[in-house]
Amino acid sequence: MKHGKKYNELAQKVDRTKLYDPDEALQLAVDTAKAKFDETVEVHVRLGVDGRHADQQVRGAVILPNGTGRKVRVAVFAKGDDARAAEEAGAEVVGAEDLVARIQGEGFMDFDVAIAHPSMMGLVGRLGKVLGPRGLMPSPKAGTVTANVALAVEEAKAGKIEYRLDKTNIIHCPIGKASFGQEKLQQNFDALLDALVKAKPAAAKGQYIRSCTVAATMGPGVRINPAKVVAATA
Image 1 (cartoon, rainbow, N blue to C red):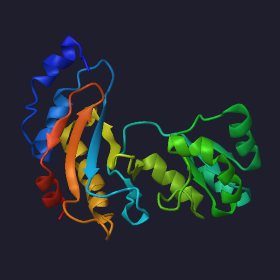
Image 2 (cartoon, rainbow, N blue to C red; image 1 turned 90 degrees about the vertical axis):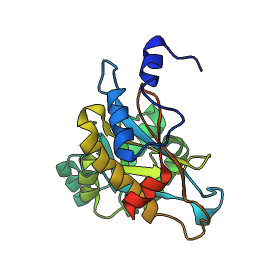
Image 3 (cartoon, rainbow, N blue to C red; image 1 turned 30 degrees about the vertical axis):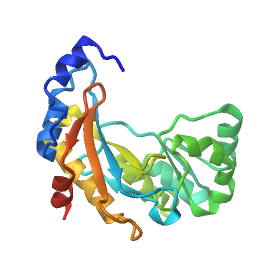
Image 4 (cartoon, rainbow, N blue to C red; image 1 turned 90 degrees about the horizontal axis):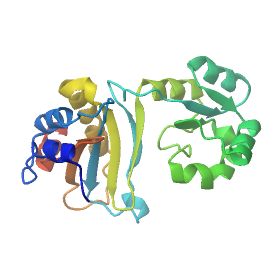
């Protein structure tokens, strides 16, 4: 892949042969975020599991102590008192059959997180082919299928993110904006990696965290020493 002159100049700040300590890597991610917008810093972690096996799946959610730095629009599938509680908690979109029909018929997708009361999953299940590929399908593991929809809305607004394996056994997650600075990004990074380590499947063998890279949206990847990640979360 060809990169522009600006990217190449920034990439020269990063030693591609080196495995950095997490704090140093995050500082480099901040230093190489030079776009005209506030770039998101992302973490990419390759795990020593095989996601094709159910007993080696890694999926869950974690609240980042400093949030993600982005406004999160929440849709909630609920009725009655639960719907009112979700609205009071700040959900932008609340509904039941009407919301399902809106998504199916109008292609409405103006939300970042979908939460459902357990009683709604019979309805929401119809949206699997629409919400699933976008990573928006409510899930008990992610805490987005819950009887306490108001709390789930508050957590989503506070910076709760979901993590899950992709087809290559890598987890990709945002941990904040470059404007957060190294210290706040480090706190979010530690929270995410601690959650991943705790989510290690019993069936996983050998080295669990195979590789870890951080990068700003338009910046080069910075490789982190996996041993230092595990040590920090121990």
